[in-house]
Amino acid sequence: MAKDRMEEFLDKQEIYELACKYMRGLDRWDRPLFRSVFHDDAVCDYGFFKGGPDAFADFCMEALGTHKSNHHMIGNVLIDVEGDTAYGEVYFNAYHKIDADGVDTDLIIAGRYVDRYEKRDGVWKIAYRSEINDWCRTQPTEDGFFDQQPDGRRGSRRDDPVYDRAAMR
Image (tube, rainbow, N blue to C red):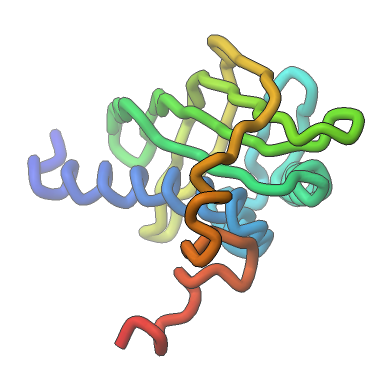
């Protein structure tokens, strides 16, 4: 029997929030949050990495740990729900400020996550994730805005304002 439309909408929303948590986990360098979006037996296939979610979380945290900042954005999200399995295509832009031989450099990668999600014991998580890279750009950083706004608030890692709920009250 086909799912009712409201149930399908709620399933799609829960799956969409996995993508949001994945991105926050990367940008805030929050390994527990990042790892939480995967089933324990998930497969991550990025070409340059293929393995399980624990090794992938370690790989990502180590790689991003050398970056000065990161900013991942979600674009188009298409999710097809088939019972307790769903398939998704999630467009992304990933900004990385890196040190390239002593020069602050912007590395921007755009592509898509092509996923399979499974609902187990009432909870959706990623069972298979692959990354398809469509384009990238590398260029020296130009942060003139930050120079003009030295007191402006900036994003950070685990001490980012998004984790300070008391300050938002």
